[in-house]
Image (tube, rainbow, N blue to C red):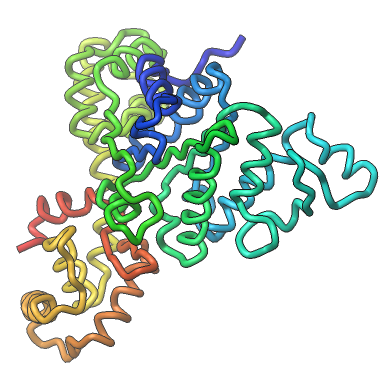
Length: 384
């Protein structure tokens, strides 16, 4: 039997599963549960390997979609496709028989419809489809949306969120078996956009910080590293903290330990060599990001710096921001002939989006794509 390659967090999974499926009338998670943590810190693995099984063990039907998995797919379309696939994946559905008989329409929970027409403005709403699915499986449905902030970047994605809100309100009534929305994101401020305003679909939904991996993960890592001499847990934990709790950094360092001939450092130098390998992996990742920043035009660099400095309070076209761009531009290139005006700032922000440095919501809010970029730029003296 193959060794399980995943570190599991059953206590956290059970805690969250109990929160999500709490049937009390005023349970906060009935409105939605939002979990925020930096990217590549183990959220997606936890959802798939721990939380989903914990929820399914309690009888829930779990649907999962990662809006970051394929950025060429429009977020709203990805959510609709997930709901459609739920019908096709249920072997017990009338759909299988209908398709076998050459029929396009199916009857589920008393509702007859064409599965291809489930979605947004296509005849059958997500609320109707999920309601029918709820009645069919006679169990609460938990819809997990990984990197949910991507839904806010398009009008169709926002429409899908409002459609899910309508479905949540309908399925959480006494007529069905319940719908819970679990949304994760790589930035607390981006997720907050989905719940901070009355104009948003999940106004005041529950928002929690997703706890980072810690010493339990490090103990598992050193126990399963496959080295002839075990790494020191405390030293590895300090390296993990320097790596911003990203498991992939430790994994890269582990792979980089052998020399070109595949020979590992001697036992007495193993911890030192591993710390050096972790530092090199961090530097490699940082340099890849900084390379993009250093290649920016002076105006692009100025706009990026102002966004990084202003953070959540960023107002791209305010007079104060235009003044700040001009000041940054003067520092970056005193001879620049670029004009700092609204059209040029707008096109610059679009260019920064294309370089995956800036994230934009459909309603006009901006944020850095990677929140760690602020600390990185500051550490390299790139922020005044």
